[in-house]
Length: 522
Image (tube, rainbow, N blue to C red; front, side, top):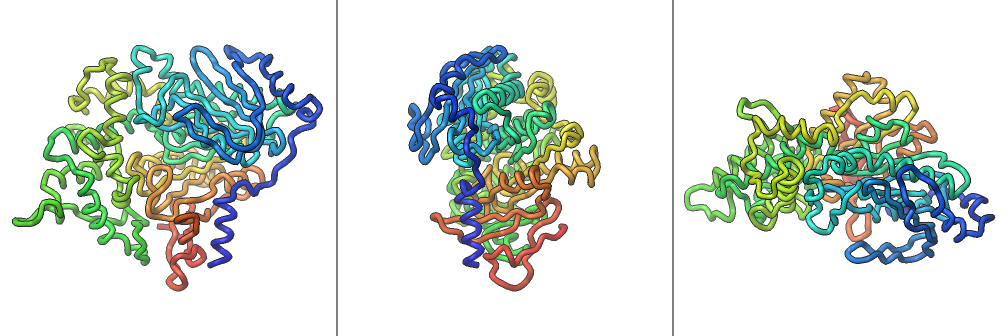
């Protein structure tokens, strides 16, 4: 177990321990800083390079409230803008380039450069790029501003698909100009909105990337906003008595875990197979004389059932699958997404309200609780869907060029239903063929992982290395090692298994050691 933990720490925490190449001779021979500054003269379609300068190794302090990034290698930082307003940055390591390029995605409604993911890529030796997708919306607010979209379908288009593509094209040109040679491989990494962006790239522009690591994707974008952000909000807010205070979330979470945690043979605080969990929240309804702080009202239980049951129109037709049981607790669970600290304080409400007001109805006074799931759903899809939805299951163009994708989703995601990702994967298999799909696409479900990370399970894993091995060495991933890390130390490990297989305890040995689990079909 000790050796296993050491291996996990090396693979997951010290991801910079990869084979790095020295930067090309073009950099050394051209005078270093002068070569970087020379990128100002680079001609790119509809694009202006605003700055190009070398950033010394160490700490990069960005204007507040952007993050402070530490332990960066020296790099050439290029800042540009593509008309009408697509801002982007390309970072080019000067001494440790691995010969590859990594594009990174966004979150929420974007509107910012993804500096932290860029820093991770840079530390691994990648040349890397990110875009704000053509508008400004700082992620340290609520992350879901959409006022920029009012009356601007062109900006919605840029946000939906154009910005990442043109940034990828421009970044590759910058890389080639700086190093004197094109990147030998191009990878994409993104989760949430970034996951949706990755699927959009694979569907619309399959030549952009050789490998894509796509997590918790918001690809079925219109249905996500209608059937998740809005539906969960309506369930808890339209009738004020249905609202579930954050203080009561643990009641639900503890009851679900008590009923379903041990179904996989291990009691570890994780519902590993939520589809096997059939907990009925009606048992939590307050009994006569019971302290109301320790139970749920009938209307609160009805709200829980609506969230788990999925969004439906008046005829009962499913609009979008609901959340699955497990993972309600913790700071990244329902208290953040569903309930918030007060009514109308949850992230689901903030996201739905912003998009409906400014992107769909162009009316800042619109009451989002008045949305009609029968008639307004079609309006939303017709207006926004063509730019935002990435639901085409025909990935054969990507397959034909030899690209690979690792798709993953946390079973305990309180934002985007993991069932959406499973449904998309199944659609790809139906369209392309089961065997053919397995040759270029693998799905990994992550027990206990909430939205893009965190949660009670072993949720830290190095998907990019697995993707690199698949693309570059032809080794398709069957299982990926994941770790639960507490205070910098590995507490337990689990294998993530290629869907539809799941990790099953072998029946003997330490349950905190991945070696004692095998991958079996559900």
